[in-house]
Length: 222
Image 1: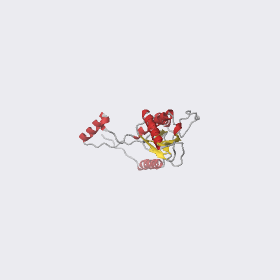
Image 2 (image 1 turned 45 degrees about the horizontal axis):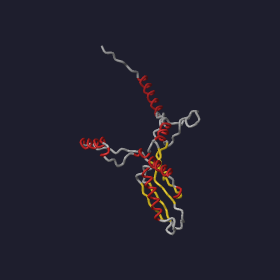
Image 3 (image 1 turned 60 degrees about the horizontal axis):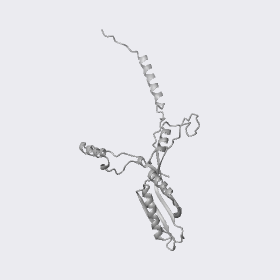
Image 4 (image 1 turned 90 degrees about the vertical axis):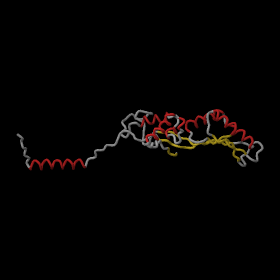
């Protein structure tokens, strides 16, 4: 035999009132708390390496140094210039061409493949030729708004309420990146250079599903 439960109108109204008050209270609360893990990426920064010196002072050690720097950070061809004075009997175009060729040969031996050596006339320069080198480069740095963890890099070990988890890890990774420009991704990938890449392209055509472009990092200027 089924029992019938009776609800009094007073109890029902009381329960309804409590529910309404609870909803009103919740509407005034912010249930979202800001995250404690950084979502910022490693920051890439672009710049221009440029240096001038007397041609006579250019050493093999210096050429080896800029070759290593270009291999690690360079993102453009290296521009190598040797100047000469059109009215000088010592600082001539022929000597400048010979020096530019020698510098380019040494830089190629040190691994620089993308380079534009040339000579440049400079009026009233005198007998002292100038060597100039420039190229665009890219470096990796800690994410924006990030500081190292308390206790690292001689920081105060006291609690830092604004510290974001993951900042120190990304900061250390940024220092260890061999070539920061690799974080930008490959814009023009040759399918022949990688078998898996070619297979992926064929599979996409077979399935009829279009591959979405892979987004890399973005760099900021100095």
